[in-house]
Length: 244
Image (cartoon, rainbow, N blue to C red):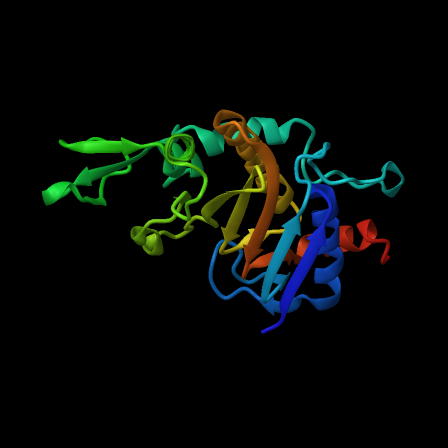
């Protein structure tokens, strides 16, 4: 296993460094199972990306106009993506949304008041709904900042049965040095489009939570054992990194 570690200034810098590094050191293979079975991709064995100033604007990648290639994230998309993270709205054809898991997950209280995994639709008798975002804010405001319990889960045990389980698995949090920091883990992660769009939305979520708690916005440490580039964007990646 090759462990990659990237130190970045802001989100555009993190994206560029990951693209540059994966071209040189990514593992090339054919996907056996999943949404893109049969296609090739380059992938880090495991990567950690430390972003010191993720709130610096713009949040989306920097693509020089002279290159003549489209930005992986359209202007305004990150703001449109934010409700997907922060609201429980789910369409009938969706197995889940990140917002459903973070801001509106339903569970059934078992005997003794302990929670057991319930109906994500929230329909059953005795069902309870938890908004992890607001609960973490409340925890910090009422119990203080010295805790390791303020983690927000996205995955559930039954996700292993899904044909397309969630890529984002958890957002852990920490308040240290007067700032709110996020530690984010993705099991699989599209570097070209998903990485900048996802982290842009996560950054806006962090800014909201920091303001509600009353602390400054902090850093992001993102990790994945599946950050990858699909073969259909390899040429674009080479152009952006001036390899062509």
